[in-house]
Image (cartoon, rainbow, N blue to C red; front, side):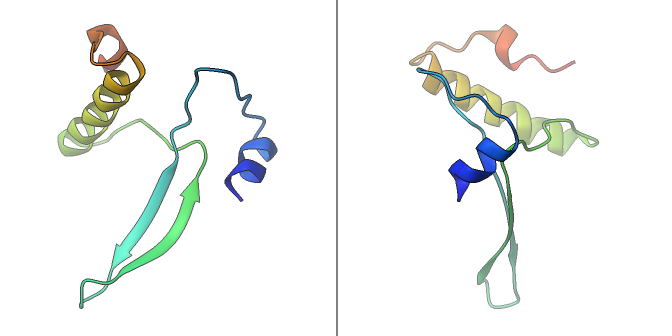
Length: 79
């Protein structure tokens, strides 16, 4: 299903590349997680400081994985 969604959005897959997949979940009163939707091109913009911190942390973790432990600050800089 993800491959079809990626193809349908025109995302080009290359060697040594990665895809950020956004998955939206909701928790009910009992703590059960419910799948809402998956996004093959999730938004990385932000409107609050909390959201900026979360997305900056996500980008830093991705950079750490991609660059094998070295995190170039220019990659995670958000203006």
